[in-house]
Image (cartoon, rainbow, N blue to C red; front, side, top):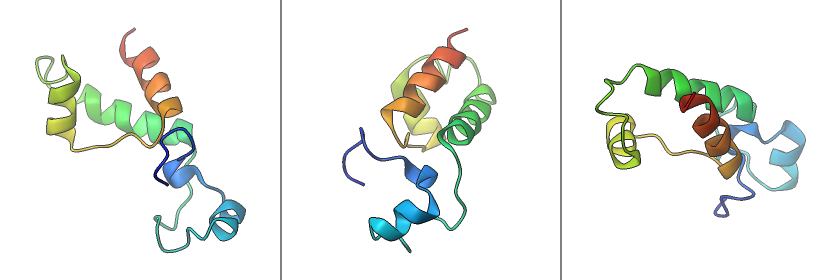
Length: 81
């Protein structure tokens, strides 16, 4: 959970949660990394343009933390279109 390269957030499957002892550390529902990225994108798109212009503003305004670099890459690609 501490290594952002390995942390999938809520995308850990039921089997992975059992194998890695993650039960109770994550929300019960499993969301794919694509679903997580889509949720963050939706939230970012609802911000005023000036609020999403810098990553600092996005972190402060949304209060969100990306679960992995893979999600960040997906969001960066889609958000910058």
